[in-house]
Length: 83
Image 1 (cartoon, rainbow, N blue to C red):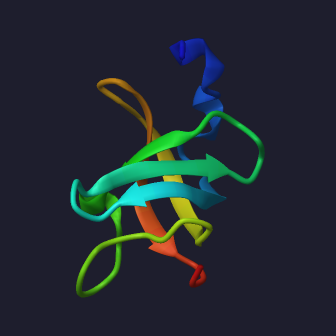
Image 2: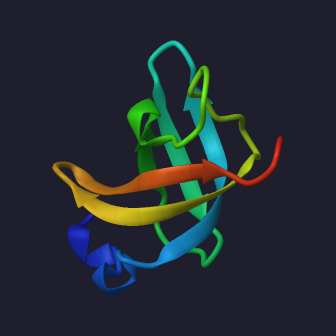
C-alpha cells in the first residue's frame, strides 16, 4: 500500500470503523474504516479502555487516524460496541 492511498485530510477527525482482526497475544490488528478507506493498523497501546486492552473481530470502534512509520494507523481507539 502506498501512502497516497490514505487521505491525509481525514487524520484529525474522529472516525468510525470495524475491527477486521486483532491478535490478543501479539497486541495488534487492523481496523476497516466505515468510509471504505484503506485498513488501519492498530496497536493495543492505542486502545482507550480500562483493564485488558484488546479488540474483537467485528467490534465497532471510533478512532483518530494518523500516519505511522509504516503507514496509516489508528490512535485514540475507543470501543463503541461489543462484537
